[in-house]
Length: 359
Image 1 (cartoon, rainbow, N blue to C red):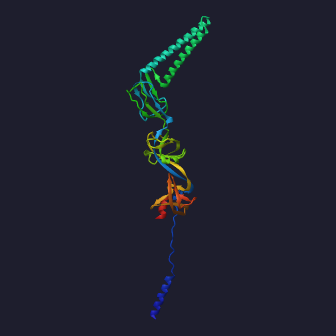
Image 2 (spheres, rainbow, N blue to C red):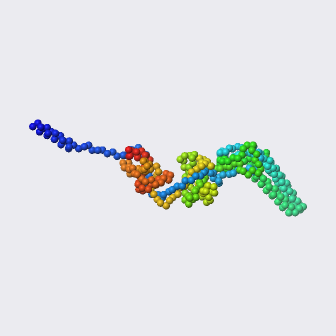
Image 3 (cartoon, rainbow, N blue to C red):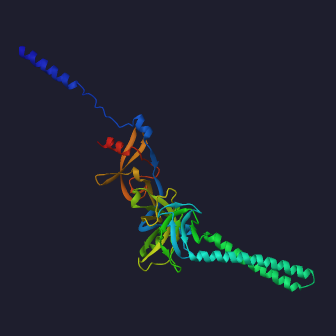
């Protein structure tokens, strides 16, 4: 009888354990916190024309239309130079002074011309009085007036020469800046002797609030370069900083030395960051015939040799989506597969969210 009771108790215990249900498993899902949700930004994937880029080497130059070469009009001794290479000068600012015997001859011409005008005026007065007194003919009055006009014309010419070349007394010739700008070339020093037959410029002044980027285009790429296409210029001096412009001119000749064609891009340079003769890398962007879905480049996450984007539906529904990377052009990346036009991708906080979703 004891054995029967024991077996019954064990049987009841086994039945009770079998009927107990295991605790329900709780599955957690990722939800953006209020703070992260407020700082998370998204962009819509769009079907756009496919762009491509060409990369060339080039250099920065001053705008030829805003650059002045200054030549000396006389030879002589350079008594003083007031500026240095790289200085910013204003229009009319004194650059240098030259003492010259030629300037002394100009001064003599001026005095002679003034004397000739005085004499001619007196001759006109005398001729007119004689004519009024019936002692001479009208022809003599006309001739006297003609001589006066020539003398006045000569005096005016010499005065204009003084104004244009800033000639002053004491055999000194002053050189003044004709425009605002920077001294980008200087070939004159104090006590230098300038020859009368000197044909070289002694100063170059350029306004560089706008500069040119000249790029050398390979023969194989000439057919892809068009006026007005977008250009991006970078220099080693400023790292990731980009200067944007458009192709403004195409030089339709091949340089015999470089075997390349030059194109010109105008760039705004208000902070004077770009200096003439800087080396530059120039990227030109052109549009192909096909279209493809594009997203901001910062939205693409590269992990384990694969490309991913985060598809945002709402703060409770974010999907990690593998995509096929096709091409990146600047801030835009083209996707060949894995995403549809109109879907939203996360562009800020994407790395933090990706790590949280894929731990």
